[in-house]
Length: 244
Ligand code: TMP
Ligand code: ASP
Image (cartoon, rainbow, N blue to C red; front, side):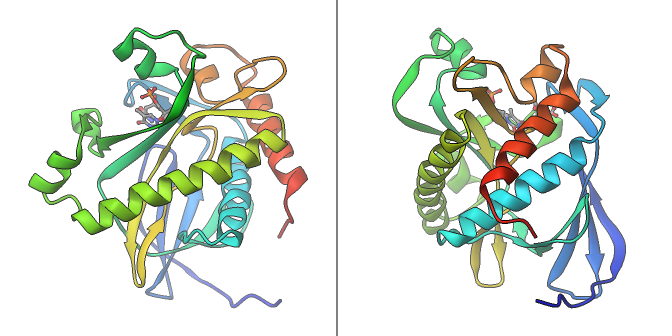
C-alpha cells in the first residue's frame, strides 16, 4: 500500500540511544535509532556500529508482531534504515521491568544464582529519571507522586504480562531465551500505548542452545562481537516475520 509522505521537523528530544523528531503531522513523530551505547546509567559510553539499523529493524518487527496480536503500540511504520514513524505519546515516567529468569540486579538483590528460572514472571517498577539513576519504586510511589493513576497502572501491569507471554514465545521460536527486559508506556490519543523500543539494548537474550549472551550485556561486560550480536538477533527476528 502506498504510504503518505511524511516530513521531518525539529528535533524534540535526544536520548542515549534514540532521537525524536517532530513531523508535519502533529500526531506523529519520527524515532531515529543511533549507534551510541551507554550502560551503568550513562557512566560507560561507546558506539556499536550498525546497532541503530539493527534495533530499528528488531523493534519494528516486534511491534508489528505485537500489534497483530492485539497489543496497542506507538509503532506506525518503519520509515528508513534508522527511522520509524510513531504515534506521539506522553511517556509515563515508570519503567516496567519484567523478569523470567534471575540475572543482573535481581541476582544481586536477592543473592540468587544467575540463570535460575522464576516460578512466575516478576514485574518491577523504576522511576524514569537518569539524574537519579532510575531508582526502583512501587505502586505507592507511583500514586503518591502522581506518575500514573491506578487504572493506568492496572492496565500497564496486565498488558506487560500479556506482552511477556507473546515475547517469550516469539523469541523461543528463534532460539532465544528472554531473560528480562524493560518496557515503557505512553499516553496516546486513544489510551495507553507500548512505546520506546524492544531490542537487545533493553532485553537480556540468551541463545537457548549455547547460553551465549546476545544482548547489551556484551557491551556492559566487554565481551566483544557487539555488531555481530545485534546483527544476529536482527537476522533471527526478521526470519520469522513479514518485512516492510
Ligand atoms: P537490571 O538487571 O540491570 O535491573 O536490568 C533488567 C533489565 O532491564 C535488563 O534486560 C536491562 C533492562 N534495563 C534497561 O533497559 N534500562 C535500564 O536503565 C535498566 C536499569 C535496565
Ligand atoms: N540504559 C542504562 C544506561 O544507559 C542502563 C543500562 O542499560 O545498563 O546507562
